[in-house]
Amino acid sequence: MTLRLPDQRLDHWRDRLPDLLSRCSQPIVDLDCGDWTLNCNDLADLCAAVTEAGHQLGRITGRVPETVVSASALGLDASRSNTPSNRELQPNPVTTPASHLLFHNGTLRSGDHLQSERTILLYGDVNPGARISSTADVLVWGRLRGVAHAGCEGSTTAKIVALQLRPLQLRIAEAVARGPEDLPQAGLAEQATLKDGVIAIEPADIQSFQKR
Amino acid sequence: MSTTRTILICSGKGGVGKTTTTANLGIALARQGAKTVVLDADFGLRNLDLLLGLENRIVYTAQEVLAETCRLEQALVKHKQEPNLALLPAGNPRMLEWLKPKDMQAIVALLERQFDYVLIDCPAGIEDGFKNAAAAAREAVVITTPEVAAVRDADRVIGLLNTQGVQPVQLVLNRVRPKMMSNQEMLSVDDVTDILALPLLGLVFEDEQVIVSTNRGEPLTLSDSSSPAAQAYGNIAQRLQGEDVPLMDPSQARRGLRAKMRKLMQTRIF
Image 1 (cartoon, one colour):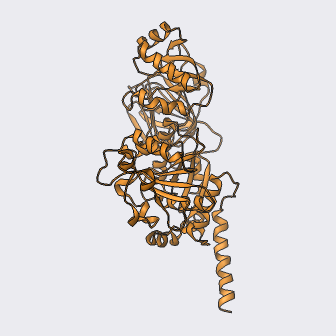
Image 2 (tube, chains in turn cyan, red):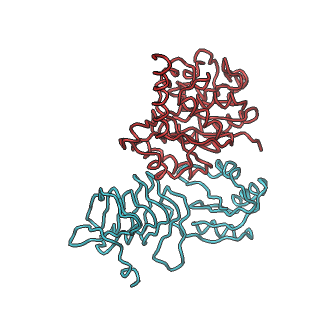
Image 3 (cartoon, helix red, strand yellow):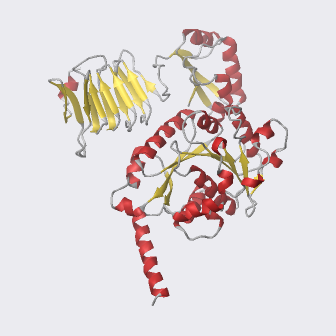
């Protein structure tokens, strides 16, 4: 399992560490340093704390080069992570190399906002009150019941696809539409695209994905 | 590591029944033999003591315990009828700022030494009060009512609990009105669990006896009341203890009520 250091804006990692460690159940713990800049001393303290709690440290990832270099210097298995940091949301975004796709595993709950410059593929629901926005497409493998914005920097060819498309509000580029109020047809993925400046919903078109 | 279960009772929205649930669950767990303490983290507007009828017995709070001006035993208020239950107010209503997440963890660590269950009554909202209360919790029970606003707020709170690593999070659906539900004037149980995607720990029906009992300072679970809410809280406590108790069915409840009425008519009048 992965131990994530807290958001720098919220807590200092030293304060949260005992608590985070007490929640770890597995022997091997990977460490995600997030945005923290940690020197060798910090990392040594971290290692000691992990070992003291009876765990074994696995991989270390971080977004800050200094952290990764320090970790390597200590002989730890360290690598850069390139997950976007500018979110209050912690759960597991994974990117494949050289991809235009951001994969997010998990439901967005009310108040969450997932934002990316890449096409977002979300495995889970977007609940009412949550927002998902991308400069490219938004693909939801689940129920879209919140607010979705595709092409948020003006791309009018962007589209929104969901297994169940019942959003509060849809936006594509500058266009805004309220979600449909009737109940969805069961078992039919739908997509929203911009047609003559107006957002239109229709059954999802598989062909348009195969071009990529 | 202790086997104490430290459970946060939270909801996001106010007025859905956090404090009522905490009081009733506390009594129910204590009656089932578990040593239980209820920690009032909503001490700015504290009324857990009121609901338990212990308002006039509070002398110290956790604040004094941490400042070492009194012992924990002095601050803990034992319930009059149910000696397995104790109450601890987390702080003084006039000194809201002193409490930090690490203080909360320190209090709970002290309590975990001598109790089987620590129930934390969380304040409404998602600001500092919530963060403090959540910092010390290991698991959580989210209370919501079948209303759109309450479900929305619960969803937000669940998201925050997930990022804090609180596990497991379970759901109690409070103030269910079977009649409105069957007339589809209210979100159904499925509607709520569909959005929140949490295991349902219990359903509590709207019950006027709850208001009477809270005003009197005697939680419903204290007596062997046959009121539906008292039974529901008892069931929730049993499920928390790992017993398999079937959920109440709102549609059956109506029928049950009507059958009872009919019985009453037959026995008393004819």
